[in-house]
Length: 61
Ligand SMILES: [Zn+2]
Image (tube, rainbow, N blue to C red; front, side, top):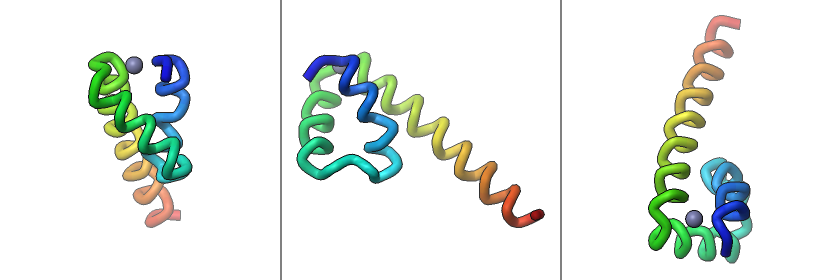
């Protein structure tokens, strides 16, 4: 897998939307690629923040 495709899949992976066989491929790539590992950690943090902001907004809507 190349890094460009891996990074396209990372967001879906974090959201739980990636097909299991693709998730396996992505996990294998993340284990051996520092750049994508870092991208994954960043996206995970960002999405966690967005989810929290969304929940707060719903509570006060
Ligand atoms: Zn990579």
